[in-house]
Image 1: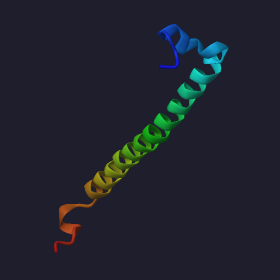
Image 2: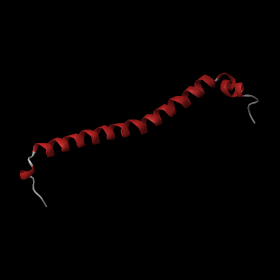
Image 3: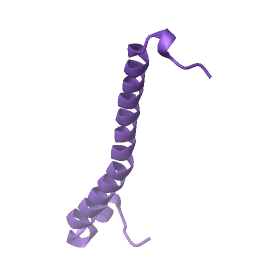
Image 4: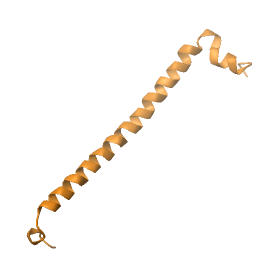
Amino acid sequence: MYFESLSAVLQMDGHGTFVWSAYFITLGVIVSMIYVPRRREKRFLRQLGGQIRRSEGSNPPSARKEV
């Protein structure tokens, strides 16, 4: 193995701060690229469902067309 201890892996000959921060930033971007659109989709579907329920609730049953 290239590194002899966990401490050496974390330090990476003085470059560890840059390397590990780059990994964590990349991981954060990837996670947010997955999480944010899913959250927006859930919010949109919840709002759309509310609008549909409100529009169906405003029509009296006799005015609805039955198919």
